[in-house]
Image (cartoon, rainbow, N blue to C red; front, top):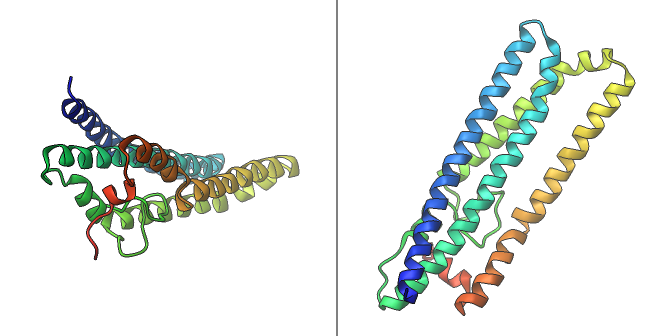
Length: 211
């Protein structure tokens, strides 16, 4: 198998991976939303303990969808480098999907809140990320507020344990998420490997046209 054929095969795999994790992202959003609504209805139906399950579900959903997004980053970075390599191989700019994604969805190699870029690259994709994040936070706070009286009735030990564990998990999610996504740690690791493998700056390969 020659180099161009191998690169084309790998590009097909990465495009398939991009599609799969887009599907996983929205599937996980649907599952989390549906489960949160069901738990809220059960709580209003007369089982208030169900309210206390909403914050963990919302938190797990946020982490899971961010995990899905991390694989989108992985696949898009690799696909962008493969496209650039194939374009060089045929000496013509035929493959432009990476540039289109950079401009239309969200840019790579830029600071983002997972997939929401708040600068020139802000898009509908970014808005949907913010909307889902806000909705999840709202469900988290609603479940906590509605279940707080039930929690305090269970005693100080349960209250301390529940709020303490939940607080640690929220703090860890925010800190690690900021380190991995906003600070660009994850993307910088991809860049390091791909730059070394393809012998050029991946940021140049992935950068869309100037606005």
